[in-house]
Amino acid sequence: MDLIVTDAAGIPTGSYASWTLDLAYGSGENDFDLRCPARLQPGCRWWVDGTGWGGIVDDVKTSVTGGEGELTYHGRDWHGLLASKILEPDKGKDYLTMSGTIGTLLRTIISRIGLQDIITVTEGTSKTARWQFDRYCDAWSGLSKMLRASGLRLRITAAQNGVTVDAPPITAAGDLIDSDLIDFDATLASHPINHLICLGKGELKDRIVVHWYADQKGALSHTQTIKGADERTSIYELSNAEATELETKGKTKLQELRDTGSIDVDVESDGIDLDVGDTVTGRDNTTGLQVTAEITKKIVKISDGLPTITYEATTASTESTGETGGGGSSSGDGHAYYAGSGLTLSNWTFSADVTTSDLETVRKTATEANKAASDAAAEIAGARDLATQADGKADKAQTTADAANTLAAQANDTAQERVKTIAAGTGVTATRAGSTVTLSAPNTLPAPTSLSSTDLNTLKTGWGAYWAGGGNTCAHKPSGVGHFGLIVQRTAIGWTTQILTDPQTGKIWRRTWNFNRWDEWKALAEDRDATTTIHGLMSIADKQKLDGIQDGANAYTLPVAATDAIGGVKPDGKTITIGEDGTITAQSSATAASFLAAHPIGSLYWCVAGDPNDQGGTWKEIPTIIGGHVWQRLA
Image 1: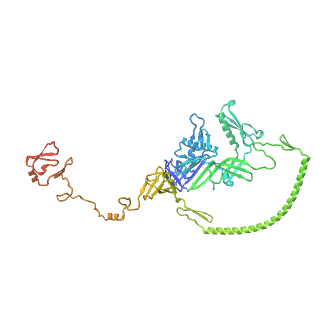
Image 2: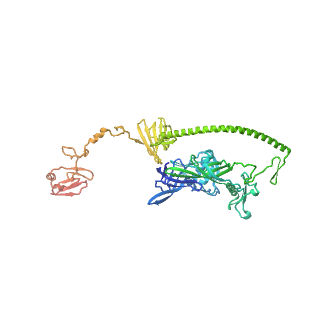
Image 3: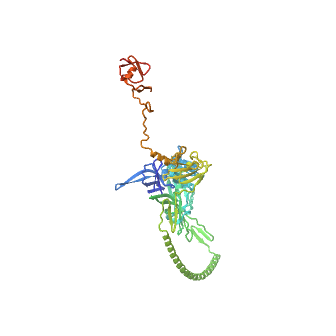
């Protein structure tokens, strides 16, 4: 049983197998204490898939003993999250009143208290209800009371991608389990309150007063039927209540006062799964007392992933079905007595008139009784003989049974010898019942499922194998893919990977769901040689060619150009120059004497860059409007 934890945004961050939990929800408390290896912060969430166990961390407690610290995370479970929200009447209204299908009412309340981003309603029943919530009640109590009136209960389930609620029927466990599973001590009230005086708004003679009465069958009305010593009266004060509210709440209060029988119920949880709102029934066959108790609290304790579940219950009803001999008895609400033929009831005293015909009837009855007694004596004698014979047969049967027990013990020893130790391997679990061993392999892929028009984005839970024919219209498959095979695998933290094979092109595609979105399909490289037209891997021959290239083989140096060799030309700023506009100027590399001979005194020399003084002689630069530089030789 793995624990799933999230960050404050609700994104799963880890899964743990070793952890401890103390959680209770229902009457009086809806919270938890959790210890696990994860470092959680207030606002982080946790849950166990497929259960109603989970919640939000509110507090972090540190306990340091011997220099070592231990963290305990405390917070509201899902029920406590609802209990922390108050249902207020709309502005200008006395009560919050709603009507519609159960699913619609649940969705409206969840949205009204602002939890629609955390809790999703999955209830789809067509059952309808019209309900008036108590003023300023919490959402958990209000919804539970509303559903109970329709024979339903609130069920919260944590799943891999969120928390869901629905409203299944209340389970009456008395019809499903052996009532011996219920141990109880019960006291049945003999004289409960049967007259309630309800006092509402007002003072003295102007105060609103309502009387509620219960009859001998427990029915409530405004008519008194029980009087005298059997009448028990009580006062109920609601100082600010109007007449309508006093009527409703007074009736409810009298019903509560009548259910004053005490009961302590202990429900064994082995083999049954109950929840708050379900009922269990037990019966004492000795006294005929039958007890039906409603589960009001569920307590879950987990140590190292192993759960222990207990329940607390209160009395839903107690009923005595036993009889006492010798006439009627008076209950706490009184009893009606009726006089039969020959009887007279006067002032609570019975009188009888005995006639001759009555005595004759008694004589005949006595004669018939004597004959029946004689016949019975004869039958007893015969029965005594049969009993003696039965004793002998019983002795033989006992001997046979002893021999059978010996053989059974030997057979059990043999079975134990056959299978002494069961060791489960990776991915395989083994269970043993006597000499029978059952092996199972969870998380193995099932048989492939055919797809025709399924949106592949929806396949993101659990494990699965699928295939689709060429005419399929499945959405969100790779572009250009026709028929395909698909494997879906989900990790422990909820990430899902899809691997798709396309037999037409021989490509393998992969993509991953990370709780928020699917990434793009990516084609995986194949184990084949690459060509000029096909993607693939480097061949062995190509790798050998690369290995044969000498170090520095690609360190190419451009040769210098010459009159008899092609190469590069490097500007030296003298014989070869580059102007600001990118013009390249080249001049002879002959001696300075030849340059001066080519430029006699008084001649002009134009160049883009350079200084002719470097070649000798005396030169003067003169202004020019044609660009570059103009020099005049002076000597």
